[in-house]
Amino acid sequence: MEKRHKILEIENMQTYYGDSHVIQGLSMHVYEQEAVSIIGRNGAGKTTTLRSIMGLTPPRSGNIFIDGRQTTRWQPHKISRLGVAYVPAERHIFPGLSVEENLRLAARPGSGEDAWTFEKVCEHFPVLADRSHQDGATLSGGQQQTLAIGRALISNPRIIIMDEPSQGLSPILVQTITDVVLKFCVQSGITLLIVEQNYQMALKVASRHYLMDTRGEIVNNMTTRQLEDNPEIIQAHLSV
Ligand SMILES: Nc1ncnc2c1ncn2[C@@H]1O[C@H](COP(=O)(O)OP(=O)(O)OP(=O)(O)O)[C@@H](O)[C@H]1O
Ligand SMILES: [Mg+2]
Image (tube, rainbow, N blue to C red; front, top):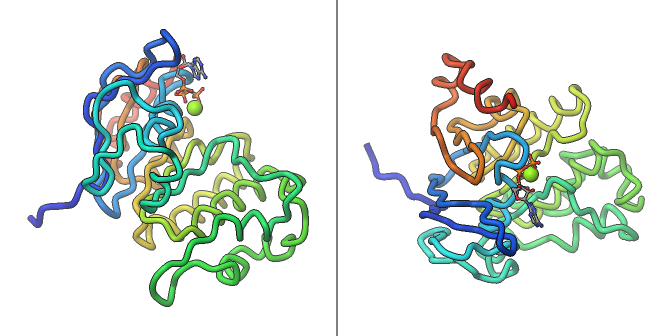
């Protein structure tokens, strides 16, 4: 088998909020073009893990490698310039800016004919095209999530890191967002790291899953097939 490239690798990461030791030695990796999820209950340390990768809450020790580069404690803007887009759970749509402005601010040139542009976003997300002049903050939850994903795509990233995209959405909208993530991220070859408490969504979009217990402890690392065959494992880790 050909040796796969680890586009993201974390070794023994320790992250604190002040004296609070929230991630106590996390190791994981994501191969290029792989879609991986982190599944874990409230407060396990999922968001903190993503924030550490993005440089927003830098780890105190351990190593993070992105595309072979040691990026531990790099500034967030430097990490995003490597081609890493972050879609936070709160979506962080800029209020007072239109949908179009929210998108254009995030745009970075991509290579090739299928690179994402404002026009391409409008073509694939008519809901954003129709509302391109509307203040982004006045969109509904599902529309804001679509905008947040569009904003990630228009930066033409190699890796998208998503925190609970299903949060606060109705089941129908979760389905819509699942389809969007599958079609435009996973199937188009963008590496995906997604955090979800909605494990049904995680199983649909990702092919490998890290089960996180408290304090960022990874208790298992399984394929979608293995988890589907052993649903009790998920229940054990998500129930309180
Ligand atoms: N800014 C902060 N200051 C202090 N403690 C924090 C801060 N943010 C998170 N924590 C604590 O760190 C731990 C991990 O939080 P984190 O947000 O990473 O968990 P999570 O797995 O994303 O949870 P959720 O499912 O609620 O999103 C929790 O105990 C939380 O209370
Ligand atoms: Mg969280």
